[in-house]
Length: 305
Image 1 (tube, rainbow, N blue to C red):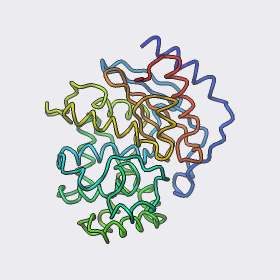
Image 2 (image 1 turned 90 degrees about the horizontal axis):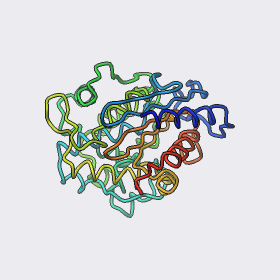
Image 3 (image 1 turned 180 degrees about the horizontal axis):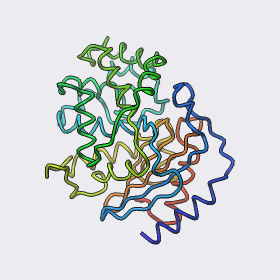
């Protein structure tokens, strides 16, 4: 951990005042109210050593990072049948694109673009008696963190401006790949995206994708080793939308971004590291976060390749 700590401190200080050319995701009005200068980093290793710097304990809206958690619960409940409803291919298109759904007959390319996450939300609405409450309890259990919660302000802000997500949901419904009421599915989806966590929280909750021996509270595995491998693979190829290849090329770890400015990255059998910086590049990923992780894996030689 001492080696990681020194390198993290050096990169953080180097990038803290770098000219950040990104823009905050103000198309969701509530996200536009966040201080654009926030910058935090936290790493947790599989032996539970951890280190954080900057705004690493401030909570923020994790947005699409939560799609890993909804996918994990859906995989638990649905098993391999899940992949009949959503594919595992990179889309090469923006995260909110409708373009491929017509030719793919309502089957989203992967579970991390909005269309895919909406289908995963539909699967969970079909399985869970109280979807919002049950999903939140699942997150609390696997993180052993009872303080986790949604941001109702962010959820309502997304609901008011989520016209494209409504279009996606209704278009998929026209192909029969949304089974439940669209408003119920969308309300659940907007709440999932509004989940609030800190860099520290995120680096702890995703250890189950880094450690094959990770057990949840009740002594039961969250995912099988094979399932964890598959989710890591989708994160590597699809976790950054149409910039996923660039992230794999420059950083070399499975990861996932969110338009709240957070990024998590997993090194299997070693650690989970999280960066938060709200200004996004043109692809919708944290400008400073991408830069930090590229420098981190270069200096620590911790790419999986």
